[in-house]
Amino acid sequence: MISLEFHCHTYASKDSLTRPADLIRAARRKGLDQLVITDHNSIAGARAAQLLAPEFIIIGEEIMTTKGEILAAFVQEEIPAYLSPLETIKLLKVQGAFISVSHPFDELRKGGWQENDLLEILPLVDAIEVFNSRCMFSRFNIRAREFAERHNIPGTVGSDAHAAFEVGRSRLLLDQFDGAEGLRRVIREAKITVRRSPWWFHLVSRYASNKKKNRKS
Image (cartoon, rainbow, N blue to C red; front, top):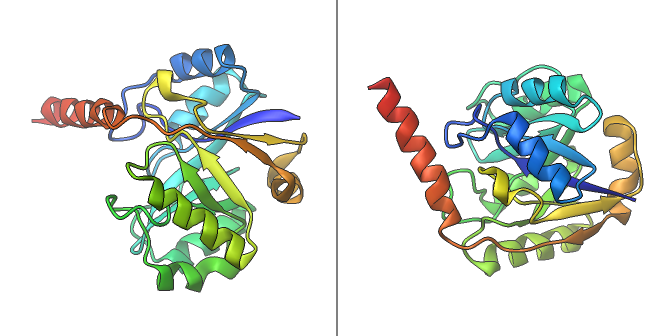
């Protein structure tokens, strides 16, 4: 089996300062076998990381739609933000990407979802994120897991790392797979190890966001 981090960020995200090389180094040190880099509305960081470690990095993207955030792996072309969920999914399907949904019931995040909106796209996605280490309250992850079980849809988990030291806190343990279609075949049998992150981890991304804003001003 391989150990996979499905949700993490680099400096290509507006709220991270993490260099791809540092993220890769930390992930390998923690025993991860592969890393899906999912920057906000960008694949630039993932592409830079893949140049450093082609077999280790899967290019992903966390895409803000008009209803919530989509979490995709095996992205070939960057998807712009603030399209409708259906349009975003259509563009990802053209690329053959694996499609999950970020922290679907996190009421504290802009990228959370209303249940009716999530139900509308459910037949079109491959999974939903059933545990996100950065969810501030356990009930958000519990609700996501129960929703996935109720609707018989596979789950992904992720650390949502914005700093290198966070990577790997939540990971998928999977049979080896090749590409998005291979991931679809093995995702239902995945085992998970999860660990919630303390509230102060959010200060790391807040600091990064403020620093980038100050650079522009």
